[in-house]
Amino acid sequence: MPKKTSSSRRVLVTGGAGFIGSHTVDQLLAENVDVLVVDNLATGRIENLDAACTSPSFRFEQIDVTHSGTLSRILEAFQPHAIIHLAALVSVQESIENPALNFKRNVLATQTIIDAAQRGMVENIVFASSAAIYGDNPELPLQESAKKQPLSPYGGAKLASEALLLAAANTYKLKVTANRYFNVYGPRQDPKSPYSGVMSIFLDRFAQGVAPIVFGDGQQTRDFINVQDVARMNVLATKSNQSGFNAVNVCTGKSTSLLDILDELRLHFPDAPETVFKEARTGDIIHSLGCPNSARELLDFTASISLREGLAQYLQSTTRSSALLR
Ligand code: UD2
Image (cartoon, rainbow, N blue to C red; front, side, top):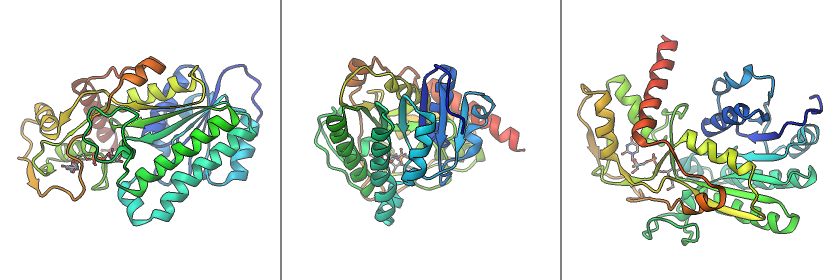
């Protein structure tokens, strides 16, 4: 890989071929940042980077972030100003079935990134954390200081990673932003697993003329945030002036029930079949809502895409890609 000589900002994105990663890459490129993506393509898809691949400021390496030697070499050649670490095992269910793999991908990988950042003198790390670290906490809206009680190995690993990053920020004087994502939705989210994001599953079923399934009474609520807002937050965090470690909720502060989403979707699919209600999933959280104030105060971030607007855009992009497939 040629050593960079340009004076533009350089950002390494791990997991850049994924759902959130690829939107983050698109926004970095739109800001004329030089971007290097490393992704093992375990769950990421190279097609998510179709637009990025046309940019001369973009490059891609198919590697696993836990391969520390390779990662260090790549970092040394690219000399990024910031790392956005999104590569992860993303399925809560898979973390329960395979906790060792969860540890490798969601804890060990974080340490590898810290080591590489420290050796490569990268000052700024942005980390994909999750509302999963709060577990089922009734003190809504959740402040960053709320009690952490993860309910899965996935949530535990995200919390452990935050602890490693906090220590690294204190020890090596790194700047770290841990973005605690709430329920992210939007184009490129994969609807294929039963544990995929509910919005992607509903949209997929409506598009196929199949009835959506609601687990429980549909009155459970979530703080849904559009992936483009999340990507904007990732980009903002690479330019953070805040010193040390900061964890921030990436959320809207607005609560939406599944029934509300179905009503909204039915505006686009008036002939869709009736909703099927099934027993609530064991361990399902009833209400989840984040407090967005810290993100605004620390990074001047406020989610700007309303659910109505975000859903309409999502729908348009899904229709476009299915038309392309035909
Ligand atoms: C989200 C995250 C998860 C973890 C967790 C922490 C996603 C996909 N998952 O899980 O990674 O961070 O938050 O709290 O973002 N549902 C249906 N029908 C369906 C699918 C889902 O009714 O076909 C329900 C599901 O039972 C739940 C709600 O929809 O009550 C949201 O489910 P989800 O899997 O999208 O997200 P969540 O909040 O459980």
